[in-house]
Structure formats: C-alpha cells, structure tokens
Image: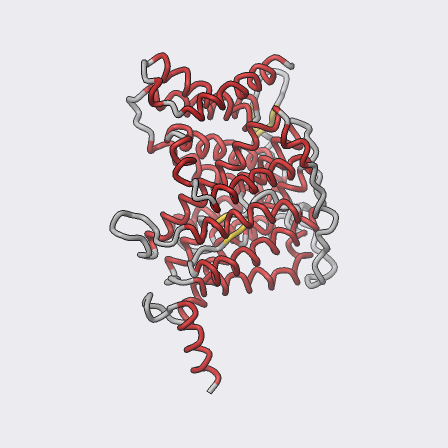
Length: 443
C-alpha cells in the first residue's frame, strides 16, 4: 500500500507523468548526476585548502552546499539541475586572491558574499535583462575562455607537468620522472577515454584511477578508517571580512564572482533545460526566475559557511541524459551527496595531483566557449584574446578581466562604435583602468 501511495504523492509533487518520467527513472538520473559531479567534492576543498582553508572543514561545507542547494532546486524549482560550488569561484579565491594577490581567504569570502548579495538583489528585482545587456558577448566569452585556461594551467601545475617562474622562461616542463605527473597522466588518460565514450562519471573515474596509482608511488596515504563522522565546518564558517570587498583592489574579483555566477546560471539552465525539452519554441525556460532565485540564495549562503559560490552545475546534463526531467532528480542527487559525509576520510586521502585531470579537462571545456567568437571581427576577437593572454602572463584572473574590458572599450571607440558600448561598462572601465595601472606598475 505504501509504495503506490508514495508514487502518487511524488507524481503530484513533481509532475512525473506530465513530464513523461517515473520515480525509478528519476532515481537513476539522480545517481548519474551525482557521479558526474562527485569529483567536485574532492577538487573544491583542494583548491580552497591551497588558499589556507582547513581542507576537512571545506570538504564538509562543499557537501552541505551541494546537498542543500540541490534539494532547494528540486523542491522549489522542480528542475533536474544539481547545485554546487563553482570551480571558477573556488580557483579565484584559493589561487588568485590567496596565493597571487596575498589576500586572506576571509577577505575573499567577503568579496564572494557581496557578489552573492548583488546577484540576489538582481534576481528579486527582476534586473536580469539589465545585466545581460551590460556585459557584451565578447566579454562573456572571454571570461569563460580565460578562466578555463587558467584552471587548466592550474591543473598542470598541481600535477607537476609545468613549472612557473624559472630563471629563463615563464613556463617550463616539469619532471615527468616524478610520481606527480605520472599519476596525473594515468588519471587524465582514464578520464579522456571515458569522456570520449560519453560515459557518466568520467572525471570521478579519473580521480579514482590517479588516487589508486598514487598508492605504490607514495602519493596516496590511505586513512586508518574509511568511515567517520564529518568534520565541522566551523573553522571556516562566518569568518568573513566584508570590509575588504569595498576596496578598489576587490573590484575585478567582485565582477568575476558575479559574472561567473550569473552567466553560469543563465547558460546552464537554458542549455540543460533545452536538453530536457523544458524550454519553449523561443529557447526560453518558463519559470526561469526559480532557478535564478535558488542560485542567488546559495551564492549568498555559500560564503557564510566557507564556500565562495553556489550555482547550477553543467554536470546536471548527465542526469538529463539519463532521463531526468523533474526536481526529483535533484532530490535523489542531494541524498547521494549527504551520504558522502560519512566517507570524508576517503575524500581527504585523494592527493592534489589526482585532482589535476579534472581541472585540466574542465578548463579546456570552458576555453571552448571562445569558438563562438567571429574570427574575422577583430573588434570582438581582440578583447577576448587580450583577457586570455593577460590572465596567463600575469597569472592573475582579475588583471585579465580588467585588461579585457579596457581593450573592448578602447577597440570599440577606435572602430567608431562607441554607441555599442553600454554606459555601465564605460563607467566600470574607469576604476578598472586605475586598477590595471596599479597592477601593472607595482612590481
């Protein structure tokens, strides 16, 4: 009696029959989405630990954000989108801010929190269209491409495949006789092989393979117990320096956090929604304000517990491919995320080099957005390339953003197309110009 009654209840809550799905199919889709995104449980804490955070606390916080966000999306949005920390935001906080700019992680969380509040205000006031018009396509594409290459390079550095700041050149090959590159290449090979066959969990399988390969090479140290209660995230929760978010130095990173969260939400919801046949004939997603509200709330709550962002994950597409059509997919995935809280010692045993394949492949995938630029339109192509090159040369994503926006404004003015530049972007270019000047002359 219970099973049919439960099925009826779930059907009414999630409109399963209306969307042509079932409880069983949604369960398989939720497990598939979880497998596709589970690598983030390892990668995100590793990035944040690079910036000085406690890795155990960051692991627990990341899992909580993924579980709560996915449940929120499932029950409020009734959409098959899983939610979790953005890889880009974590790289900005853990690497660019903490290591390159020497800005403590509480200040980085303050910038991320202000970005989340702005995102929430924009969502509640219905100002999405205004933001979409403010940022031209070349800047959006340049953001994704430059951050993608930055993340891929970070993965190569973590693996020991390349080394920075040698005496003769900016980049040099690492020592491939060392365990790090060997382990990373094994993981990369497994991930590429599975991803080329479009099998779910390719990233996770690559991390597992690299971790296992690291045992005989001395990189992987197995824990004494595989199961344990999760670490508290108290060491990183509510440790926020909000005052730093209002400084000039924070401006490019505030823009980076906000743009990353906003356009990640927009792109993921429309692309994955279309894959699930949830969009209308114009490519719009009915009720898109619901996933936007979920993401903006999580982008605000995330920094409070120590995670710089929370957004709809593109890995949701794996769940949709497996048949997910409703929020029940997200709810099942959330339960899977919660279950991983009991095996955090196993997560903590994954060496940094084993996460490199996921960073490299994700970064290259993000860089692929640059293909949408028109190659013979120099006024659009140049700013994006400037953003990519400056990010890599300066090893600083914020400096790359400032350079790209300034290049876009200057090129449009020189081309006699100043009318194409949004007024808001013209205003933003003034403080960004000063920031870029300071960044370029301080060394």
